[in-house]
Image (tube, rainbow, N blue to C red; front, side, top):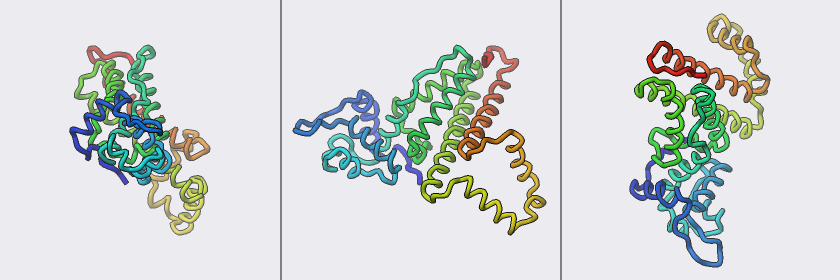
Length: 267
């Protein structure tokens, strides 16, 4: 299930993203309990989502974690829609705002992709928030700015780099989603991926003994993984697939710079 971002009141959401939430301050309420703030509400919401995903997220669940009533939260955040935007942006604040080009743009792009993928795996609920509509917050924008700083070092034009940036986001997000869902499947079913695949492969051989003859190219692709020395665990295999896909994408970007005036070596 995906949540579409940017569904809250535009004026209030953007004011929170670029105002109180960005500074970590905001209004506080006096009293015997520790004062609340926009930042505190968002931090508690992130914890709830880390534990149970966006399906577990509600104003009541966040209020319970803070030891407050749901009504108390509305003083700081208008509702769940605005809260999701703030959470999404806050999580992206864990990423660097820039990358060194000392070892070339390719190394920097690889580091950016690794950091973004690690963020998604730390907070898999981020993958449940559709990025068809960005939240337009400062932290989310810093991630794009960091990538743009790396890509413009290639010397390629903006229209080419826009496509490269979109492809990099799609590659990282898609791979992280598969890995996160594999973890979820194993936890939810109690059956490890290797065990699941082993049983299904054996059963498939029984019901479709001519599988290799009917789908020879699919079998050839699977054999290619073995030829490459596939890692033992399923998660390691997904990591290796991500690394290989990223390398292919960067190879294409590097090829586009060859022979172009202003093109910069990746190393």
